[in-house]
Length: 288
Image 1 (cartoon, helix red, strand yellow):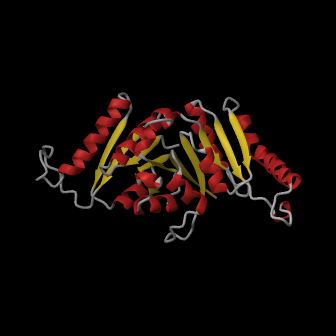
Image 2 (spheres, helix red, strand yellow):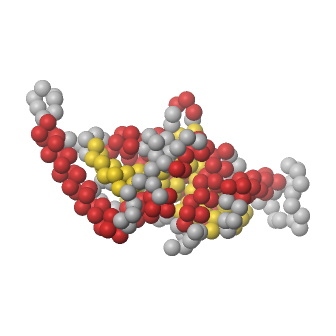
Image 3 (cartoon, rainbow, N blue to C red):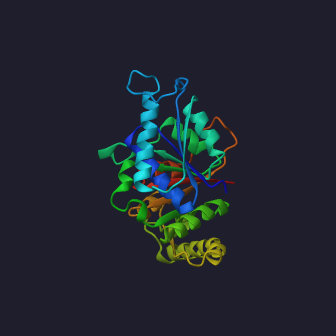
């Protein structure tokens, strides 16, 4: 554990929401919060802070000041590091990710379209970093916000130790229920000739998946017995199953397999659906 939570700042409302979410996460982890803003045109610093927009460094300092004030208002005793660097934002975030337990980024809301924009920097971070990345929208501070249950999606066909580590510790730190969800496609033999579903075949499929899910969760339930766990198998595609489960969640956690091809930016359809459509903060956890 590095005991550092890093948030990338860009001056947007989503960026401030991400800073507040990251401050809350840092307090839960008893970690330091790193506020990071990178701009390739950052000029050499003067002895006095920039006073107005005529100074080349005015906006970077304003972005940092606004984030600091938002964090201090919420977590006045939190240890905070402020980092302004003359660097490409993606390069700066990738470097910071190697020194952090979690990286938090804002994600823009498209409003009436009920979906969200994952920008190029966010996409590259989600696709390539070995550190969990959390994506936050401004609307997450209302309604359920940070206080809802934690939902984690499990495939049951891939190693999930890193995913369950993050999920169980997130639920434990928040004192909320962990809802472990597995979306299961029905096999071909579960459908009859008329296109309907054979009840027995569907129930057997669900029962088998519930047993596998229980086995995957058992070691973690033994390690952290105080965490309330609600294990669910939904007979539908994984992406919609997760989105339905996340309706009133405070955090949705999904896994992403490590990609060795560093130029590839595909993140998988389940992760894609989560980061673009989930109504809560989304943590993408890389795993083998």
